[in-house]
Length: 326
Image (tube, rainbow, N blue to C red; front, side, top):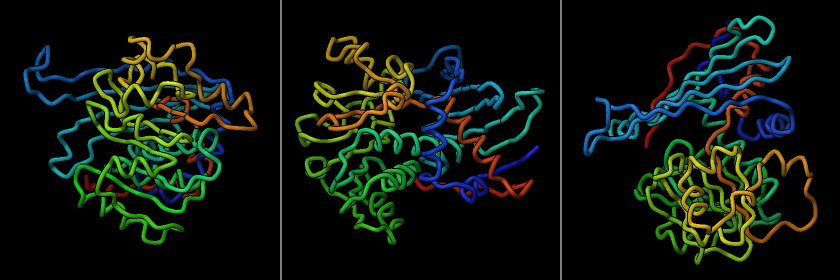
């Protein structure tokens, strides 16, 4: 069985290189059962003030291709200890025998997959000639999302905003060789008003982005909210926009959509699946306002795992994963 560690995943793929295999995956038949989502408490129920912990189990399979299962945890308190908030392991199984084919570092796979899916959606929905990309959030995923958006569009500048200005500056420094200037933004509203594309990857419990700030033509990439209690954008960001999701589960799992749907701000039936938009091969004028909301779909994990195994030339890659700075 192949063992592909954190470094190995990065040696074999870039975010941009995964856009094409993910496009094929979203256009191909596959099965992704509803993921198991568990809140992990010390007791039977959460105590007052107890930090939420989440266990996710995601599986998918494609006929004659493969079967995959990801086990992931989200422990927000890890950030205070300088540890990753998200950890995961991925097991790829043979379609023919069910035997394990590969163990893959699930955190690296998730970071790459999430950013590549956002890049795929942006390639379909974002303005054709944007000037400014704004990244909201400074966690591990922010660097991957910037890489993904830069892979599908040419920007004149990239801005990064975070609650901690020092962390935003650190992310900006990581892109010292970027084809366009990358800098930290001091004020979120000012940065949002200048942006053509905004990507959000935070654990915010209330909206950070307001619709009144947005340009007439814009694309909003919402990644962070994976619970009904979490939100990154207010209702005005959704009104009149073309909204797409990676999976129908986003309609109930994410507060960015579940609340507005319940209040009648948007209609559930008016939200598109990314795969359906790709199948339509949309051409011509893009809508002025577009929103992509992802919560993670197991079919995308499987596509990335298959791509990694197909391009793996070293049978064993076991190396220690470096800690991320948050």
